[in-house]
Length: 69
Image (tube, rainbow, N blue to C red; front, side, top):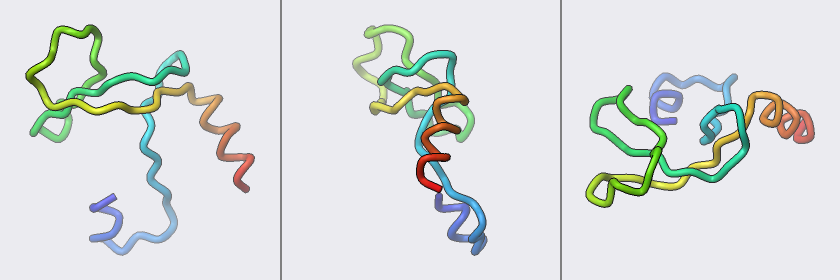
């Protein structure tokens, strides 16, 4: 979202979800490298930066966006 604002882009909407083959609430491991973030696969990572994120399918995301239009 920071990049969108910095570049004065007005024709996109950032959505904080992860895409997968199922709809769940999961945790994502936050890394300092911009492309190193990943979904947490087990509970054995107590000492890493993590936060909860909605995981959804592409179909579910499109259906929810259509309801907003």
